[in-house]
Length: 242
Image (cartoon, rainbow, N blue to C red; front, side, top):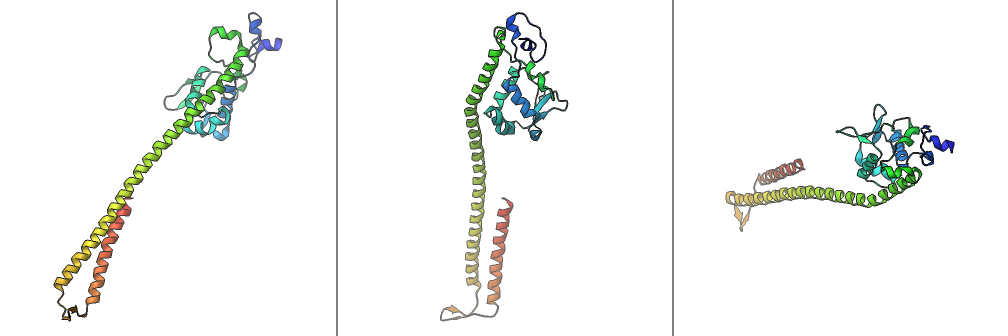
């Protein structure tokens, strides 16, 4: 009974037998949070602040997705923040997720048991029972929030895929338009060239067939090169707009 009387802080002061039994170990939530923050391998996601008097969640999305499920069995960052608030943590920065508690310091794991969950005065006469209750509440919160968190992730992924599909559809439409312009240009150039050649062709005919004269092959080669050059320019324009 004497060891229980002092508790983790060694105060040893009480008023009656009810206060002789105090909480001698930290809350499971506090222990798990301390483990996540104190792990140097995840400092790019969550770490102590420069003074070791609080911690910063640098990447909330990665923290919720990759780290929370390892200890809390859920991936709901909002639920984690609400739990911090119930243990007296305060968000001390507006530009980042930095939380502080006067008894949550780097290298001082032994004082975690002094952090109390906020509760009514009527419940403080049963601290041991309260410890079990806190653990049950953490577990229930983890299971109920895990479904809603998974649904939110699916909704976000669906929005992302829809936006990507719109971009791809727009690019496909632009490609089809450029290809049609290329085909129309080739068709128009071929028809115009054929009509013009027929009008300007002064070669003699034999039985209704034009006779081949010197220079005809060279003219045909140049026309083919002109069509190819026009097609090449349009294709370059298509690639530039990708």
